[in-house]
Length: 102
Image: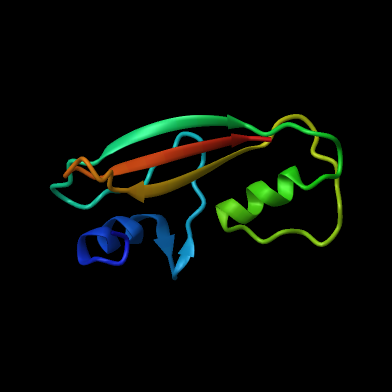
């Protein structure tokens, strides 16, 4: 679906210069005019031992460059990732808002 003309319109909303745009926790992409897309938010809490790659995983999913040096995350970092999809049983696309709490 993302490779179709309709899906590409939704994908273009979250890309900037063919790279994933970074959004803050209160920001959202400007959806195409006349779209009936619904935004479905999810809060994903990433937990685990120190130094196993939780922050690197979230950075990779968000399309942000990963720092080569290790640093311990202080407090909580929230990374928001949007991803468009079209359920098989529906004609209306959805925009998933994934809030990674690391």
